[in-house]
Image (cartoon, rainbow, N blue to C red; front, side, top):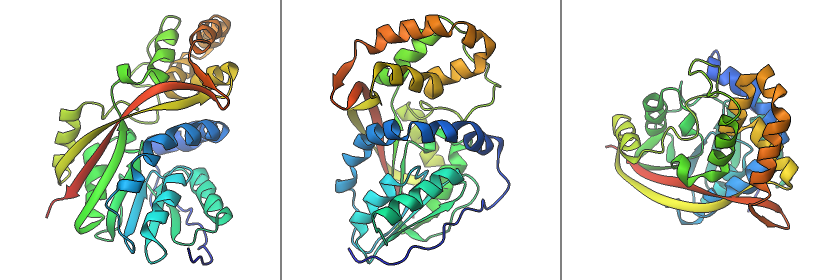
Length: 298
């Protein structure tokens, strides 16, 4: 692939941050950075299985919404060829910086990144394809966010986003949550958070209605099952769950009560993770997502 010098990172948010974006930047980002190897190494299976088959052509312009650490944008850039371009956006400046660094290290010249909130504003009619992996579930106003994604597409454009299916199909998140709930209360609905949460788009009928309201048509749901990495060791898997995901939210919101019960919680989590699948790279648990394809309405 022909490469060229990458542009200076666009790190300035376009408008004032919402409370959810501030929460991502201040609370979630440090934890995501600490466990980057788990998140990228595990979640990649859900995108790697589908990106090679997406109807992306050489020369296409692609928008990657919630690009995280840039691995999906870089993979998509391989599909567009050097005549095309992939633009990744994320609301967290630290993630955008990591994305630029990854692209520079790999000498990928047909990709760029910017710090942007997809729920507020996206370019109009600029892209042939829009993609998102595990980002749209956190939209506080999913119709507005998805409408912006649809309006970013050119006439005839397409989109794909990946979201988690229901809790029962995702023991990698739900099993630890159930353990925490035997020790601590369910967080109050008004507690500060990173958004609606990982299962907000698990219901097919409800998500279809949201997408139709946002202007998409020909909506197709495809189930994808894959194991995800939850830690290199049992101790790391426990620490990961107490930092992120539904179990992490329960632990964080409980505050002093959680710290007082931490030893008992860790004992129960030790029992849980000692029984999961292991290989040389770490511990793996079952997960399941919806891969949702749609077209922009004419």
